Image 1 (tube, rainbow, N blue to C red):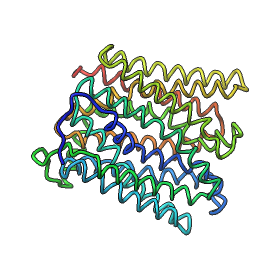
Image 2 (image 1 turned 90 degrees about the vertical axis):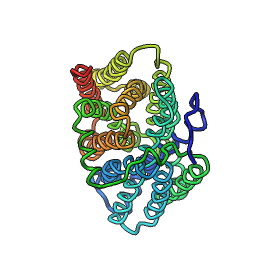
Image 3 (image 1 turned 30 degrees about the vertical axis):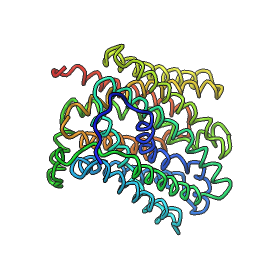
Length: 400
């Protein structure tokens, strides 16, 4: 079934595309409250435990390069349905893993299949809409999607307390089944056969390289990924922050994720309201400035005013996340427009860059910084400033 562009984005379509994008944050965040139990059962160090995130994120990023081109060749709907179905099977395997090695292997399987929904959903938006309508739909999806990081660890905490850590992966099985069924029922095909390309692996490599080596694309995708790492630093360190630094229980991860989600949702709403009212350049400048201000104030407070009340730390984390989502929809649409004939491939390469930055942040940076809230704040500030600097370089390019 194919679908022609509608005059205005609908809430139903936005909700469906948002749920497709939610698979990844649920896969990352839902089992954070189970970290101590998993470490105890398999006798793991904190560094080993952190690799349950890296084992997911690295294949997640690598297969991002496949999902988009596959959707360009075989259609958006088919790739999403196959990807979500395989993800559901991988989640079931995680729930049944007999040892830590097998758990890591099945996390790799999860990561390799979880990204289909997010990558292809972006291409669907650009298939259907352009201009301000595309930015509003992207912002609406981001608002709805933003609830996932907040509710995932809360749900995971209650499931873990009631049934144990393996039941958390059973929850992901049920989530995958529900998304697969709704997608089969309601997802339109937005990339008809006459617009498709024959899939060739050699062409995939050459085309992905052509996209990644485009100067503006590379600068903007790095700017977006590093900006997002200013929040990823807090998300990856969530068990240490909530359980060890703030001394809350496994069921209280909302104390960290609600400020993150609140910032994401408020920032996405603000981004949608800004569409057509101010220039894209002014909007990006504003978002980066807000994130940098949040990181700077957090670093200064923790360095000179300790102990800093938790609600102040939450407010500053909210500020960083708000700035990230003011910028994100604008950069995503700009990147998609650089190669309008192969938006699936563009979405894949952008996601690959973002996930590799997130994997490095969670697997290398967070283990080095999570012992100190001040170091985490400085790391967050560094990500925002690096992203801002790269964005300014891209905007100053001769093509502008």
